[in-house]
Amino acid sequence: MSEGFAIELYLDPALENQVLKAWNVLARRQITTHLIEMESRPHITLFSAPFLEPSKLESLLRTFASKHDPLSLSFSSVGTFPNHADNLLFLAPTPSLSLLQFQSHLCDAIRKEGIEISDDFAFNSWIPYCSVAHHVPKNRMPEAFSLLRELKLPVSGYATDIALVQFSPVRELFSFVLEMFWNNERGWKTWRSW
Image 1 (cartoon, rainbow, N blue to C red):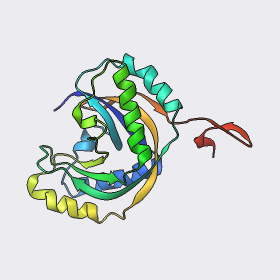
Image 2 (image 1 turned 180 degrees about the vertical axis):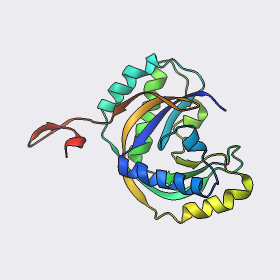
Image 3 (image 1 turned 90 degrees about the vertical axis):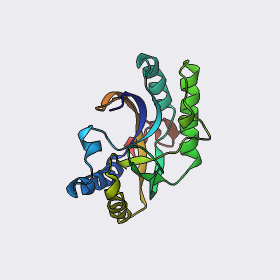
């Protein structure tokens, strides 16, 4: 089992529940329970590294989260990576400039801390996705894919939190709510007070 650290973008409760439904369908059909067993949470991985010093990122992520609004997301398709060793299936968000810029700005900030960014997370290489199945037996991939295609897509919501996790199993080290403040006619408020 691989080990390392990841910065993950968490989903609002309603969108998270839609992803968990997919996990549970695959578990009930005894196709895969890997994400449940490793105690993962539905997310989009923004950055990952085998080794890093978490204390270097806590202040960075707190500040970064305070300067960003929640991101609108719409998972509109089911996908896989050809020849991926883990037989991975995922929900892909409709690409948006705000999501791509968010990840790019995060990686720029991480790089300024002296942390190397792998090619997978470079600006023109990063592919946003939300895993719904890992370690699917090769002979069950078509069945799993068919089940996921039955989901009523698109499912939409928001990315609301950013977290640093250690894996595997997954252990959240810290997380911060995306809550840029702004002034409107009623004064300062966050998106959670709408």
